[in-house]
Length: 299
Image (cartoon, rainbow, N blue to C red; front, top):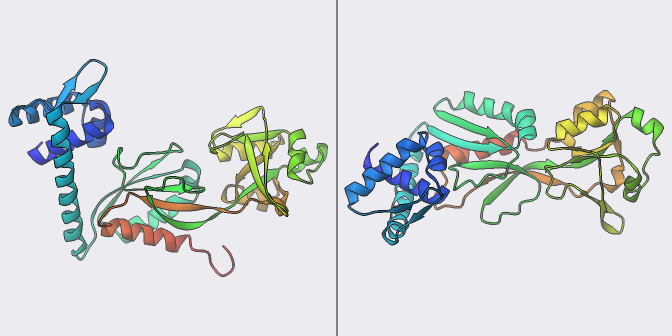
């Protein structure tokens, strides 16, 4: 690895706090990363990191070097992006993270269309429901569902997302139909633990917001799993509308309390702030915004 690559590796070690995490980010082994940092220290003639069996910590010189080299690398990346923007064909790698269910059900077809349209752009997409730190983990952007809480990121809304209540006809045949959110306390509720507050379901009534604290013996960290449990007659699920749509159309579940639906959240593309948005990322965000833009008939 050349000197610039070693400097990038050092920045990754500083930001991730370990050789293992930095090595994964840079596509190498932890042992190789450690040797390269040692080579960088030897070339500079100083120790940048204090190493123990449990932790890494920068020396005073190492912290000062990080502060300067990070700024220099940011400037180089900005320059690279500006030069690439002037090229006729956008190219290079985009690292993206997206929630598992939305990613596999809705995002993949849009990404495949983008890949076919721009063959010189590489897509490296991680589907996970974990809240990824874009900067520390080296991602260019993320697709996130719900309301944005990280104000340090730039967000562009792609589409609305409505969370709805559903239950199977078999369950409703043996249980009283809930007439208002408070009635849910007497029902078997299927909990999606991916929600920020999974045991609190939120609604919007004629007098304003309503919250209902719940318990449930079935708790899944996946909306599709919750929907399948509802289809099996095991209770009421609280799932995104795009997850429930096929089951509603097929009659496997019915929607409940439609007049109490919470204000829609959204699906957003988010990315770190910077002085320059690369052409390839701008193309991707524009493509997704166009793909998910509501049509005149609401589809």
